[in-house]
Structure formats: C-alpha cells, structure tokens
Length: 323
Image (tube, rainbow, N blue to C red; front, top):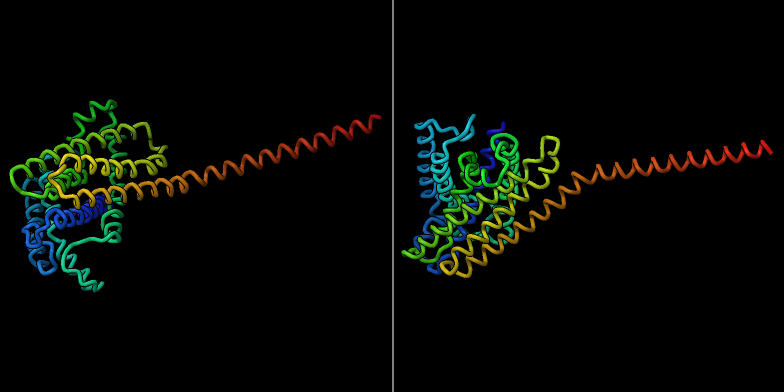
C-alpha cells in the first residue's frame, strides 16, 4: 500500500511537471513552427505515445538489469535513481499530446496544442503539486526520524543527505534540469550554458532547503504528528516556489518575458494554495482541542463559582443560627 502511494506521488508530480514544461515550450519561442513545439500538438498523440512507451520500457529494462527497486528496502543507488527518474519524466512529457487529444475528445474545447489557462494551471499543476507536497513532506518527516535522524547539524545534512534522498525526490531534482532547459529562448551555445548553470544552481538550492526542512522536523517525534501534518507540506511547497525564483534569476535574459511572467504566476498560485493549506489545517487540527479546552475551563470556572456561592450561603446561614 505504501508503494502505491509513492507511485501516486511520482505520477502526480510528473503530470504537473510535464504541464509546466509544455507551457514553457510554448512561450519560450515566438516561432510557430519551432521544433520545440512539434510534439505539443494534438495530431502528434500517437507519436507521443510511442516515445513514452520507449522511455518507459527503457526505464523498466534498466531497473530489472541492475536490480534497481525504487521503493525497496534499504537505500537506493542515487545515480541509477536519477537515470530512471529522467526517463520517466521525459516519458511523461511525451504523453502530453495524447492527454490533449483525450481532453479534447471529452470536453470538446477544440484545443489543437498544449496551452494551459488559469483554470488548467490550478487543477493540472498547482493542485497536484500541493498533493505531492503532502506526500513529500511525509517522506522528509520519516527521514528526519530514521535515516537522517543521526545527523543533527545542517552541515552534515547538506554534505551527505543527497545519498539518502528516496526515489520521489530524485524525480524532483531531475525535473529541475528539464525545466531550466525549457525556459531558455535560444538553443545556441550561450542558452544551454546558462540553462546548465540555472539547473545546477536550482538543484543545490532545493537540496539545501530540503535539508533545512529535515532539520526542522527532527525535534518533532511521533507524538508531534499534528505539527508535521500542518507544517511539512507547506514548507515543501514553498521550497519549490523559492527554487523557481532562483531558477528565474539564473536564467535571466536568456528567457523571454512571457516565460518569466508564467513562472511568476505559478509561484503566486503556489503561495496562495500554501497559505490556504495552513489556514485550513490549523483550524482543523488545533481548533477542536482549543475549543474543548476552552469549554472545559469555562465549566470548571462555573463549578468553582457555584461552589463559592453555596459555601457563602452556608456560612451566612450558620452565622444566622448563632445569633
């Protein structure tokens, strides 16, 4: 059952990342017939399915050949995990035209290419990322209490935690490389070089932020599950938002204004949904105990007041009898 949830988190994250990459490819170049947009049209559905099958089969064959189990017991090989994760992410991206064809057949919006509106961004990108943040927060909380529990300083985590990141986080790190290259305008020498620098920088920043989250989660034992439930998902979501800011800054002028605007709007939606998560969970988790405590305290005070009144009345009655 746990493995099923892990695969769900990986699948949801790939869905959201593929949507981001597809939209970035659309706004990264003004050329309508650019090779970067070739796969993003509805009529390329069968080609996309074929490519996705090839990448998925390659990931499966590689895993069987080297004995790689993404969610098996013990630690995973980080390099094999990155390769398998990269194949799955590219395969998910290739499924975009097929997904567009199915959506067009069901909803009849007559879309011919991948181009998300605000509603699509929220339901197909932001909401899956929020759900993934919940799962990834649970992963980090478990790591902070088990595998990484013995590393109590930030330096130890920053230098050594990369070997212990589980497979879902490998998918996250690989995705940042793809998003960096999808954000550049020109694929000449300077563009890919800047994308490479942006990818490395954003991966390091996200790694540093995840280490900080693990360090913050370490004091919360099993008895503090409520604190982790409220704080961990939003910390992961905001870590991804901050990584986006770093990615935009490192890519700089190698991306078009439309790309930077698209990234900024996505970051804003992530902040809004993160704030909504905090408000709802704080009310749901901490509200009932506070209400019960308040009611209990009020009843106790009323009981004390009644007892005081009765005692005062008895004292007066006793005083009257002695007169």
